[in-house]
Length: 342
Image (cartoon, rainbow, N blue to C red; front, side):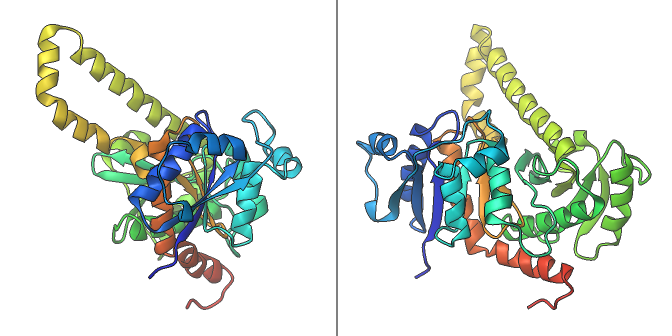
């Protein structure tokens, strides 16, 4: 029998904490028997939200934390000063090998800073990117980076491409995933200095299936399995992607409820439309992992509900079972240091 995957959840992080993280933990225990969950946060609040919920008590542990990091706090200062916060305690559990993964819907800056400072990068990994899955017409694409490294260098983007390719191969089952460089045009000479310097490096890299530049309008069409970019452009693309999807959904609902005839039509297509829209829901795939760390750190949306957080737990189980951290170390870290792979 496989060992349980130990997952720490920030019970105090996000707009809907602690109710939604607690509910997600209980729901995840029902959906998988492969996880042991640590709810990290204010013990009284956690116990209050557990009242009336049935769950396997042998696979859920409360880790008391007396502090919480607010969204508006300076990330690095908060990590250093609030040592008894839910984020810091959970990240220390990763560092001390007391947990295999950490999920938070709390302060993005604190999670990113804490991941770098407390968990640390694998040897040879220069930057740890944040990598969410984006729904496309062909399935999903991995956007890497979307928020962790605003001022990336060309060699950083090459590492992002390698890590993203491993993720899509071993997590999503895509053999030889295609890699595209996010740019303002498909021509090789297009883009800013970072894009122009990165293109030939990706083109010459034998570890990835580079297909060239990809324009942002082609991402929803599934232009590439891995979309490589710096965190500034990636975050802009991600927010526009999410905002457009949300607005489009509201437009569809508004049109369907506009008159009696459209309401009747809505009833006829309800099941098919619901199934289609589900494939376009990013929360179905969990959160965005920070790749290249000494342990798994997953960032969920600040307004995450139990559904997204529960899917993040399942994502952590798959990530751990796939031994992705070890594979990144073998494929990137050891190679960058000039050592022979296993």
